[in-house]
Image 1: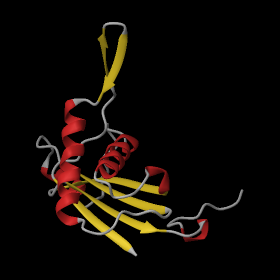
Image 2: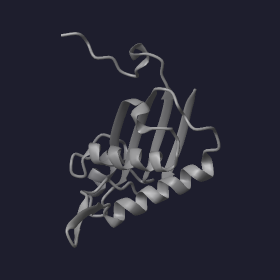
Image 3: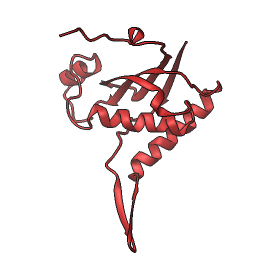
Length: 151
């Protein structure tokens, strides 16, 4: 069983938490861009996902397609569009992963995000910014997408 989801639009990485002091207490909250993007994920998933909530160990593959900067030369643009040049600048791939997984959790795709036992995230450039997600149920370590060799 594999579930494929596409989240259209420019991907947003999870920002650093913000802190606010209220009297003797300090509370944290999501940066506005991160909060809005998670809400967007919930809306898209709600429209496309109608199955029951997942409750088994999961593998999640995430492909983040970022926009190509407008100030890029034609040659660089072509290289980025074909995947020959990858985005090695911020935001980091782990920040994209965190925000996307949080959004999926808020969309009630699974009973608990502890069910995610494997995550593979890639980022690249595209003329069509979006996030593609594939979620698979797995039963054992041997079913992981990638295997690490023994030292």
